[in-house]
Length: 253
Image (cartoon, rainbow, N blue to C red; front, top):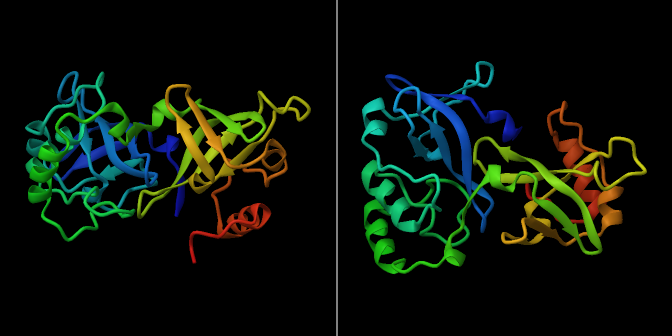
């Protein structure tokens, strides 16, 4: 099912033996547009500390009670490698997490879009990656905060047209299927503007320095695209209309 990512903020995260904290943010892979980590705020339990949790350990979410159960114990999380919120997450830091938890690695297979779906020893790959990424540059990092990208401006082929308001994810793979674009500051002729969906596949590049998402679409195309209603779940009928409008190949076939 497709869900709003922003609505998952403040979901309670439950270990096998108690509550861990709440969802604070997410890190996504900007190459494959997949959520790689949940950033958990544990300050009520571990004062002042944030921890990273892979979707690989998620159990069946309790969508009605805003709960995300994980296959971890509180002690495991308590002793896990710390992260510095002020610094980007490096591959070396990810390798530490892989070694500690025994998680599969997502970065060993080119084009892999399913978290944890690699038949490769996490520890062996982690050791290799530590060696290969020594001296890693900022441009080599691909983990980005979803919260950071909210409010990024959308730049069409012929000018600005809106800003990123949210993401729509597939809740069984944690792949980002759509960016929700809010056009109200740009479409002055339309009272309140409107919200539309854009697939990451239609993004030409993200300019991180300028906080811009550059899309391979015109302003007119976006202005006239099927309107998105946040109060209604995204269904396949709407997706078919959206892809038909843009004349783009669908992802589900």
